[in-house]
Figure 1 (spheres, rainbow, N blue to C red):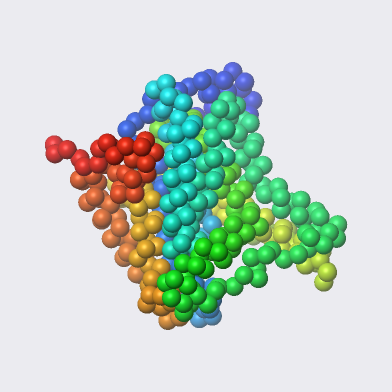
Figure 2 (cartoon, rainbow, N blue to C red):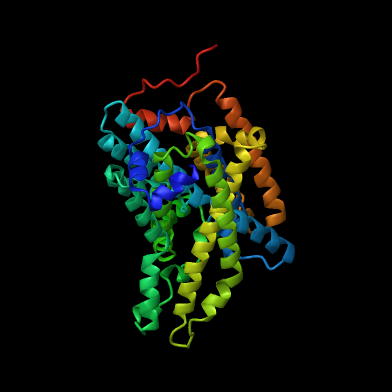
Length: 416
């Protein structure tokens, strides 16, 4: 977006109106968005593998080299990959809704059904791996539906910023400082350890535990850590990026990407260097240990958010520049994110969990990360080969067919 449009977001009413009114003619594919989604998928997979699909926390390593590898992966992708997926989800939501609107279709009910199908995928996936994100994205999509009819980009941006600033945590912080007993209680997920069923249990025990404990832990963590606010806020940002054509007309946003990258680097450095000093300003007495913890959580959330912007804008600067040919290799993976995301868990959960190989107790970060890199490289090769012959990934096709209640959805590509 040129700088004059940036100024219109804040000051120029007439320019703002023209921005809202502009209705882009979409290209068949948004490869930049696909590639960014592929990057998010890769990062999320690396985090899952470094965590041994969550079982790392049953016995975190104290070996310096293993700890360093783990910290590097989490610094690069922890808390950023799911955020990128949320932003891409919001952008895709707008693109789908707007395409149908340009054809004269009100897609609201159909998209609600589409989200229900995604939620079903998530429910089934969460039985296998409890830390599934599909259920959460389905819920966020329901909350996005009324936003589509809001014409003011500024109002949507204000709501997104409000959510990303973690309002419920600020309320808890103020209440904790005032001595409220409820606000000074530790988060509930702190007391929920890794169940024995995951470490040594059978497949049936794992499925039962995922159905009950897994859902409790996931939703409790998502709320108490502020992740739900962040996912919805970033989905709104993605929606806005879709509306202004950020991924459709990348040539119009060269300066925007550079400015956002530079600002995000400065903010990230400031938060990284000043986070502990800012948290130390909050008094911490024995009956009131939570205020500093809450403030640290807020600052860490903002740090992860700024690092996500650094990752995103840095990637897009390279993608639309000299690194296009290399980074575009991620685009096919981004086009079948649903299939690959579910497939990753189907293959690797049994590698670490008790009902399978049970390697959570013996596999180290220095051995698991080369495996993760090799596995994702194989997924990229698979995706490239797949799209030579097919239009959609397997689960993507099922999702689309279920959305429209028909199997008459082109699947195979016709020979040239």
